[in-house]
Image (cartoon, rainbow, N blue to C red; front, top):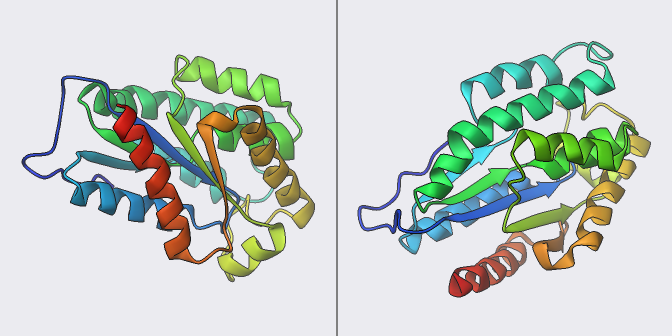
Length: 219
């Protein structure tokens, strides 16, 4: 989905701002990404709201293949490679052009999801999976990554009765995902904002806006 910018929204002239919202399944990433996009649009910014996987036509096909196939139908390494392929295409055709046009890009998931899910939870290795994604996106990292921290138990309750192939994994898998995200944030705290996903939605929105406002002021 792409938010149409107001007529007077700033475009071009300088690189935009790249924001990623990450976290385990059921953390509320889409809700917070949508809220942030609306708020920035109200301030007059050109906003590109996107997601991984599924931010492009190719991505939607890959998403269906990986997330809605039978359990065991995609091996761990194939899963990592498919997500990296989606990310390479997404960045080349959506994210980078929007940033070069001066837009603010908000993505629901980015390369940290691959590190947490395939690197940590699938136990393919943090470094290997991160290097694969960095190669795919030619080193492009978000200016800020918001991590919504959720326990496996709370995430399962929030997801309800419908689960894709990854969401159906056990709590031990989702605990490794959670630790993967927190480990990444702990390594570069200046580039992350970690928030408790169980906090009231308005409180989370306020914390995210405050951090983004600081980035915009520095820009």
